[in-house]
Image (cartoon, rainbow, N blue to C red; front, side):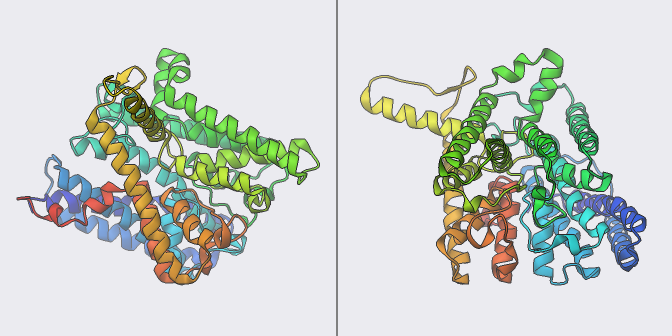
Length: 487
């Protein structure tokens, strides 16, 4: 197979150690809140993971990690699956979520920053477990950046992690000469957002614990809350606006923040993807606000505006926090939100979905198709930020979108064996593959995924991982050609 097994196993071992170490803050929280029932199970999980990790690291001889394409794809897939599986163990061993299918789904939802849950009353769980559940968002958000700046270049591919050389823009190799410097810059931005939001939420009256949980969910665009009514639990316009702002900011291409700090805010404002992202956000918010006022569901225009802006930001950035049961809103508002689930955030952000940059290119290709039929002899190129999009790039984007749609239908077919309604079948798949969180129907904003069978939960777990890894990364490993070096 020509795979560097020693290097692969070594990285898997390092991953086990990193995830185990990431459980330390949750263990500390357990001590602070005297959750004595979960001390030992949590500690044993950490020790077992560390032992397995050290064993793999020590048994595999150290060598230069000159990873090939096959190595990179396998490492990415293995590390994400192992992280999700290991992340589920604390839920099971502490008896917080005793059934493994439920626990694995919850862990996948955390690490992939999806925010879907099987829990009807999360507030009943121990504080340490809830902290771990939300901390996986923050780890997952960091993991997306790692995927962008470390793993994708090892595959011989440079550029934005979402477009992956599919579209021009501020690519990683244009930011700093060294990839490690780029990593530090993006991590610094991520940490600054985390610290800033935590402080601002505490200034609004939130406890440190709730502030951290909420920050992990919004900065990582995850959305898991420690309350069943999500952000609706906090009756504060200030707190909601703070979360709205940070969800929006973390749905933006992180590379642009670095470039803006270095060359001025004009870099951000001139970026075509950001401008379209902002327009989608603004137009959708105003449209839903208008529909809510026309429908008469809100007596206060302030409340209607607050809820519409919050939910648009939450769904567009694929965060998934909730302030209102949007299933009671006019159908046209729900259709808009469903569209936003498909769109998602910007490239190189922690958001999910198809990504704004792909949607832009698809519309430009449609426009060119119409123009070509009207003027067959005219050669019209598709451009983005002044750069031509090659035929290979266009083909890659179209094929990705087509695969995305096909997977939605396949997933809905599998979920349909639950005898669920059509809305539930499709929205559950769309929200998981797009890493959004709440859907519509039986998995709507005030419901949960606990009503689904093990088969459906495992299916949706795979969809969450596939969506977070841009589809191809995961499924390439499952193809016979991947395992045959001669093909």
